[in-house]
Length: 326
Image 1 (spheres, helix red, strand yellow):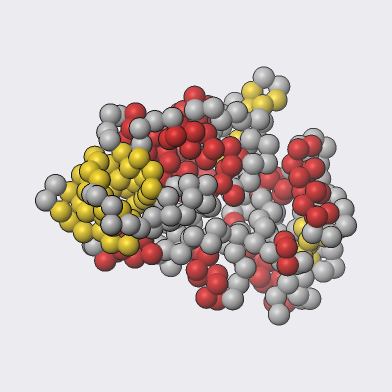
Image 2 (image 1 turned 180 degrees about the vertical axis):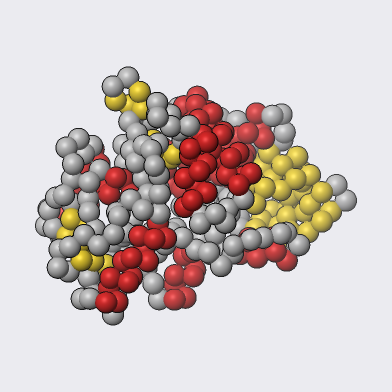
């Protein structure tokens, strides 16, 4: 066991939230340590292809953004937190740009797309690797700082101590005044237990959430897991591959086995996912997302990436990727 480490702030998790928390705490003058279950690169955030939302359009505002989020939650979200999220979103984008993230631009401004549940175009992208670009920039900031990083050091215990908390992360004991738990959810584990496919990173197994609950943390909506409407199901090397909302945002449509459009492809994710399950249950076990039905202006980098992935998976260019249910 290594000698104990003492810091002001300990961050658990190396996704975008954890990395951003570590960078922010360090810039505020705190001594910081960050512990990750695997490598710093191993996270869900790096896999996110679609983009990040903020109100930058001339016809948009943080208030309208908040209203869309509120409606998409079926009016169950914490409205105060929603307004903080949407109000601070433009500033967060500029902060990421200061760290080196270069969002795709066109016509003198950001290239904005309309995504599921949104009434305005507000999705910013870095090509079709937005999550990778954001996490890479945050990691670069971490590596250029004095933040201590502990990789392959999963949190195994967390207990109150005289001056805050004592955490056991792998072989390390870390004493800290504050702990930020940003280790992600449990979707990969849930999907594995249910025998379903998941676009999540294998590290998304939820142990840290349970630790927080055991320590008395308040929680809400733990029964609510996000279902991504589209993903690869066949062949095997496409399983777990997410087909992001931007594919639909730029014109791809959802068709049933009779090649009929049966739902708004840009509705809230839960509604689109439910529509797919209902359609599969009532008809032939197939729903497809044709790549050929795209509007003019479909971003060339995104289209090329999709076609390259499909070809690598032996799916002919222009074919329909299907999700099947037995």
